[in-house]
Amino acid sequence: MADSGRSTDKSTLKTKVVRSQKITTTSPAVRPNPSHLSDNSDDDDGDSSEPAPLPRSHTPGHLSSKSTHTSRRKPSDLTIRQRSQSTSQVASHRPATRPAKPPPSILNGVGDPSSEGDKEAKHPSALRATSAITSRPPTNASTVPRHGASAASRLRGQHTDFPSLPDPRTAPDVPVAPASGMYWSKAPASGAPHPSLRAHTTTLVGSNIFVFGGCDSRTCFNDLYVFDADSFYWSVPHVVGDIPVPLRAMTCTAVGKKLIVFGGGDGPEYYNDVYVLDTTNFRWSKPRLIGDKFPSKRRAHTACLYKNGIYVFGGGDGVRALNDIWRLDVNDVSKMSWRLISSPDKNAPGTKDYRPKARGYHTSNMVGSKLIIFGGSDGGECFDDVWVYDVDQQFWRAVIIPIAFRRLSHTANIVGSYLFIIGGHDGNEYSNDVLLLNLVTMTWDKRRVYGKGPSGRGYHGAVLYDSRLIIIGGFDGSEVFGDVMLLELAVHSYYSQISHFTIEV
Image (cartoon, rainbow, N blue to C red):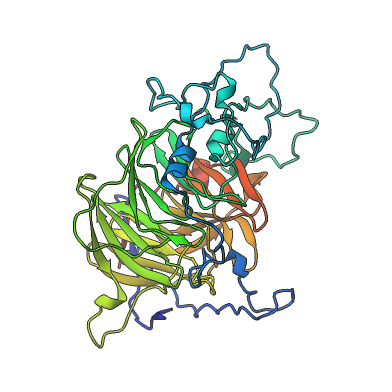
């Protein structure tokens, strides 16, 4: 693959702030290339000044080598359908005098043999799209899940009550936050239980966060969960139609009230399929795409919506990492088509390949017509670079930042004029840091966060809703998480009086 790294192109990225009075332009200084990680170096030497190698078990989805999970078989269509017919129980309103019970383990009953409960799943009654989305609870022994059923069906019938308030004598001892400080807390979640997940998708539609797919420490799923971001209530809707196979490291993009899922994989399998979920009736479909050009199978890529097009960048196909850009036309989801936007193969003869190195488990965000790429890995090196691709003008520019942070499997959310980076792997260990990239000055900012933060993790999901970032799941190299963490964003800590800004190159 081409190794563009840091280009010697002297072009600088300029930013402009539109504030009614003035326009600010900056030209950041140049910094050196990041060092490469060696698979054979000794990562036990704590005094070494060189970055430790990225553990092979933590590399992004075997981007540059075939998966070793060769014993996994692709499930049959019947098994997939049976695993996917999952329901949850209706929320029960507890009397005010009823004491809260401790939540049951979300893994209770896993692997227990049972009867053919999935075959008797009923269509749900009318569903509300603006609140917790639930369906009828099981009412008899025939709904006890079978061995080998999906995670949702294995946990069916269980319910997590709203947790009781912490006792001041045993509550975590954390410093009091000032009014302008950001604050971590654990969401008081209730409702249907759900498995611990990593490499899943978290997509916001209205006030609901749709959590799809992902895997735990043993297997991948194709279940759909809904987390109400107002009430912190989990539900498992009954879904029908052409349900995707179990997936991880895919992308899910909201287009109106429809979710567009692309790519992903499971074990040695990689896919380039497109699925659509209608969130009003919970019907999956696999539409026939127009044309004969399609992106290669991949996972660990990113996808961003801009002007009726979903722009997919990078990922890995099991043999190599990728750095191409494809556009999926979603103006009419029943007539979607692919178009290759940027690729090393499209360069004119004799021209330099000026683009980011191939990578996966990076992040992508859209600011106007600018696609911002940060971090990621090619399976050997953990990147710290920031790139901007102008979708309208179709060219790349590297952003030169004096201080850099290496990250892969992190999350990135646009908040005001900042890019909030949470967690991820830095080449040495998993982190729970909150990093802010100022998109006006293109400099990093690291601020104090109060409360009790999440443990270090990557492969989690993050959604911005109602002045808070909601973090779901993740993985720290040994444990897969099922918690929901909240980062409260006090107005003075993230929104620097800028209501509109542009990035110019």
